[in-house]
Image 1 (cartoon, rainbow, N blue to C red):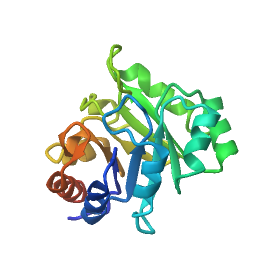
Image 2: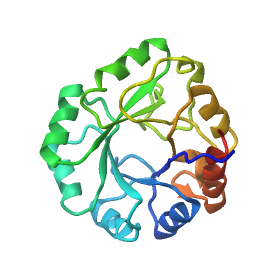
Image 3: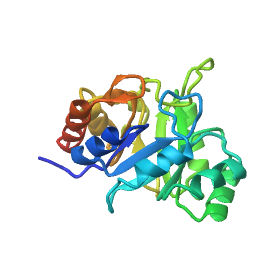
Image 4: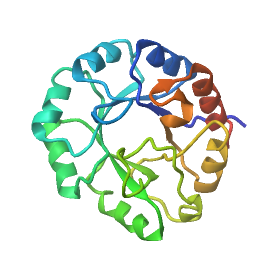
Length: 217
């Protein structure tokens, strides 16, 4: 049975990446504004890429502990539908960003063990969506996109949150169906899992990922 599992493809940095993600059926497209990432785009480049995104596909800006000035430099140039806060932002900071910029906010929470699950609840009332990702290693340069999974059994059988939530962390065309079945996620996010090299999206992998996600349930 084919289900409608919305897929977010993150870290798009070239026009052909955008068109391929749209053609594959992605419902969210993510633009990465973290300068240390191989997927980084500046506001000018992101604005040009966002202009090619059709209506109905959400454009998401990934920022890491961004200041008001840094976020303003993005939202003033790029036509966005959502901000993704991928750093150590507190619940108060999430609420501030949402109020200041008038955009829905997706908060990323890293998970490595059962103790991290409780932190998700802290953001439930302030974020519009939650993204549950694998927690990066202590010495990692990137907050996400490291190709790491976490133990999906931590989410199996639990009572879920009132906000829409998305599963991320090391997902690939080969494992996304299992991840969806185990966690009962209704949205999934991918970056490195559909790349031929860091930051280089692969059209075939994107198509296969979306098909596998939709066929999972």
